[in-house]
Length: 405
Image 1 (cartoon, rainbow, N blue to C red):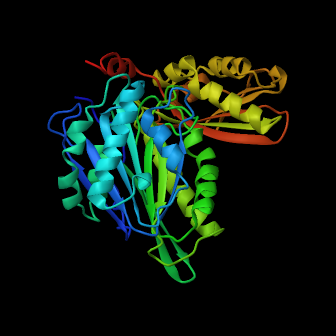
Image 2 (tube, helix red, strand yellow; image 1 turned 90 degrees about the horizontal axis):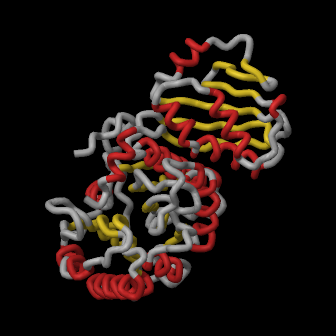
């Protein structure tokens, strides 16, 4: 049994009901015994749906199907069905046929066009999805839907996750309250190239699809595309956002709504990192003074993805030499004699050498914390970025070595 991450929140947050969205879950036995592994979300007529997806060259059939449907007609409503335990990826024609059968069954059960049904699958790659186990449960799913079952939905989509992930925000617009609720799964095979995990966000805001799509894409770049657990991009993952419009509040180009949605997305992204397989440390990597935004990003991800950096963090070793190494290998412009490094508030290195004020004992004490900041200043320009990662422990190997067992 995998232990709950020490970085996990104390409890699942109380997510407000989003009018126009209902959920149901089922234990279908796709892979797991005696646990829910399918969730169905029904989204009201008149809603708009946006999505951002993995750019993996080996995308799963469900991802390709969703990509073809985003931006289509959801005036009669929409649905999202997610199964865990099987990714339905690298399964050829069989995978496409599974998606078609699931979508057809959901469409019939909810009275929707097939084009308004979105599916996601997560789990083992390369095994044919036993979709008959899912389709035979559609009737019971559609009959048992509730607006207050979002936590059950979050639980059903987990694979190696150790805790359910949820986040919420609300914002006042024109004197009325707009609500946002989101859930996510993700623990390993996490690296930016969109999406890096499965995320489903629901809001009662009113917004046209093209505006929602632009907003979701933009906010993804500063949240889900700024995290990494192990540098591996999944074949199957997606971020889907549905706006029901039931609040009657138009949030088009509303900065307060954008900020609230961004909060939910970043919170979920951080929770995924905090549940990184075997993680014991949550690490923010801040890069400042880079010559360009691209260079800042390269250096930050080079540090965040370095096995040597991540194992040093796991061992609570303030090995700043590994930070220097990661900067140098990134391919970005850097100058050794302008480089400065901090562990939290502690200046470790500057001008190409260890800082005279640095004390190794102070650095070692800082590294014992669960939440860490590694900051690098290049001294070359004004570009900055922040990405988030976790440490790399023995448990990561244990989880992934036994994943198919």
